[in-house]
Length: 112
Figure 1 (cartoon, rainbow, N blue to C red):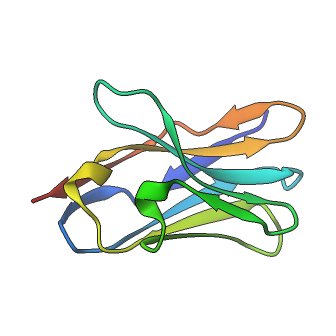
Figure 2 (cartoon, rainbow, N blue to C red):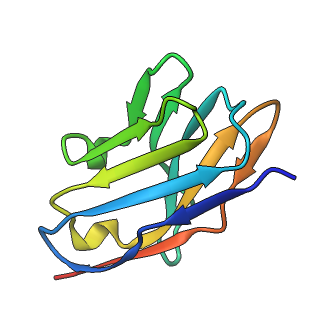
């Protein structure tokens, strides 16, 4: 069974940083990334990295967030700098190999 496990969420003040981590028990994903879902809103893409290291970011996080993967391709990270209250959401790790796989989510709260 494929498992994605997030860690690193928490409560921070606006302007501070957090680093999210996602560990997978498989290394076959062709792409891995992060989505988020704020209360009352749809889940949205935050950042994605493909197997050949191409990246894609939501406009709202460009220049503040950075996605990376380890060499074994079984972990993905999200460095979040200069956090804003609008970044408050549950952040979900995502992986794709023939189908979508999701983690359970880790909450991030940014206080103003």
